[in-house]
Each structure stands twice: as structure tokens, then as C-alpha cells.
Image 1 (cartoon, rainbow, N blue to C red):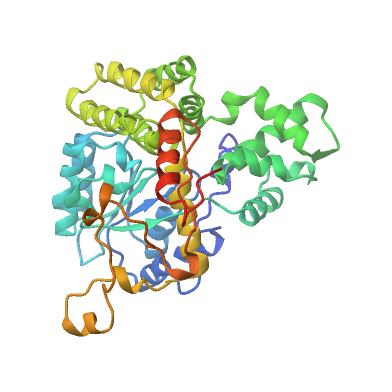
Image 2: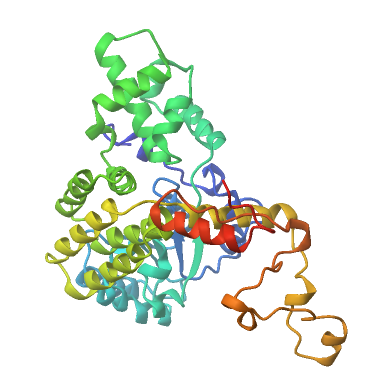
Length: 432
């Protein structure tokens, strides 16, 4: 094993029994484990955040099934590389041996023509494709290819799983074993990892090597202060595998939410100069327009949607101007998360109260029997009343009067609050 390999690479699991996390996929009797044990795996896509084991799992599957394994990164590969790899896979098909596995990391970064070049090989069974993506494949993978692949969702590692990995590192790694290391506090390591095993290992290795260089101690006791001090001091080293991508998009979104157009444009420029996918940026702004601006300025969502569509049409580098216009507009818009909170509260109520019955008077009544049972009886048709409104109860009786949408504090929604208060004064309390 190379001494200069990162800790995450040195400790990369080679067998399924060593793999940590994703119990819903590879735990006992889990769906993907059953597929692996059957030996007959389909093409599939692993969708999840960085550092949760997508690449590792693909390698384990190839090793378990003793399949030839080809690994391409969508960041560095083009159609030529894909075709050459498929040709190599064809040359390995003899004596009825199972087809090779082609693993494509960050498959969402392949454009349409690059993804098209995979279709025939997947259809003919020349290769079994395993794609890895941090982005929703419904948006980033072309429909013909997506329809030929299963999609498995991978989750961030839990605190218990991260602690398990910490302990494994101290025991299994030959470099760390040189030192007497005690992790006295876990919180900072867990926080800086963000559920990402690679970040966790980077942080541990950084802290240990920094402490060893500074004082050559007999024992290294890792605490929260030590972790934060070394990580902040050596951010570039800690982020050596490119995870800063996620920190910068986080800073960009928080700047938009915080109504700071200057910071928003700065972080946008950082992404532009870093070669970030313009569609990724535009899609995140679409989400923010609904989640953080919402009813305070409904036009924000329309403009964000127009930005997303324009970026697809215009291309680079002119798209940077469209992104900048949208970012400034969103940053300077009034903010409200009332729509987001309304659906979250409603979902929480659904989960806690279960499937409450629909009130009889607003049920569908397409048959005589249903009408006889009272379906639709005494329903008040709003347009038959003055102002096209009549106060009635549209919620299940058990949660009658529950307010899910609470208008935000901005001029647009203050008007909405006054109107709702006047209309619904006997059912909903909007006088807050």
C-alpha cells in the first residue's frame, strides 16, 4: 500500500462485510444486497451525497462478482474514452463470462451525447453500468438511459456510523497506529464531516499529522478545539478532494437567503471560475425562490425558472450574465418561507394523525349509491355566493381550524393575512 495514499483510500473496504452504512440497501435482506448475492445485477445508479461509499460499493460489487471493472470519471472523460472502454469490454466477452462493470463517477456531468454513447452498450449487455451522482438523476440523466437503470438512494452516514469509522481508523491504519491516539470529543469531527466518510478521514489525518509535526507527542488526545483549529488553518489541505464545491454553493444560497447581493455575486463568481455546472447553480436558485422567497414575491419563482431555461438555451460563457441577474434579483427580493413551512407542517400532521377521513360534503359523488351515503351533500359551491366565497370546513373534522399557512412578515403577505382573517374569522385564527 502506498504510504502517500490518503487515509480514506488506505481504509477503503474491499468486501461487503467491511462496508459501513447504507443498511437500507446492503444490510441483511436489503434490496441491493439480494441483487448482489443473486449474481445477476442490472445497470443502476447510486444517488447520494459525497463520501457515503458510492465508488467503494461499486468496487466491492465488481470484486464480489469477480467482474472486470472499468472506472471513468465524468469530469475527465469524453465520448472517446467511453467508446474505448466499451471496446475493451467487448474484447473481454468470451467463454460466456459475465459482462464487465463500467463505473462512471459523477455521471450527472456527462452531457447528452456522452450519455447517448452508453445506451447501445447497456441495451446489448456489453457492459453493466453503475453510475454515481450527487444530483437528482431525474434531472441529470437522459430518459432513455434512466429507464434502463435502477436508482438506489444513498444516505449521509449517521453519527454512530461515523464514530465506528473513527474507531476503525485508529485500529486498522498503520500510519495512525504509530501514535497513541484518543478521541476524547467526537462532536467537531462529526460536524466537519457532514456525514461524509472521506471528509472525516481527511480531518483525522490532518489533525494527527499536524499535532505530530508540532510537538511529537507521546499521546495525541483529539478534542473539539483541536479539530476546528487545524481544519480552519489548513482548509485547502482538508478539502483536497473537492468537497469545497458544497461549501461554496452553501455560502451562495445562504447569501441569497440573507439578502446580500454582493456576497451572492462573489460566491457565484467563485463557482463560475471553478467550472461549476451552470444548470446546477440555476436549479438551486429555483429551489430557493420557492423555499425562501415564496409568496413574498411570487415572480421570483418565475424568474428563476426563466433563468434555468435560458441557461440551457444560451450556453457558456454568456450564461454567467443570466445567473448574475437572477442571483441579484433573488437576493434583493423580500423573503418568506411560509410556503415551505406550510407543507412541512401539513406533512408532519399527516404523519402524526394518519389518514383522516375526507369530510362527506367535499367527497366525490359519481354514483347514486355514493350520493345516498351523503357524499357531496350540503357542499356549498363558492361561486354561488357573494364574493365567490362562503366559509365552510374543508379539513377533516379532527383537525378543523388548524392553520398550516401562516403568512410571513412582508407587505404582500400582510395583505393576504388581512384578507384571510376577514374571510375565515370564525374558523381560522389569522390575528397573530
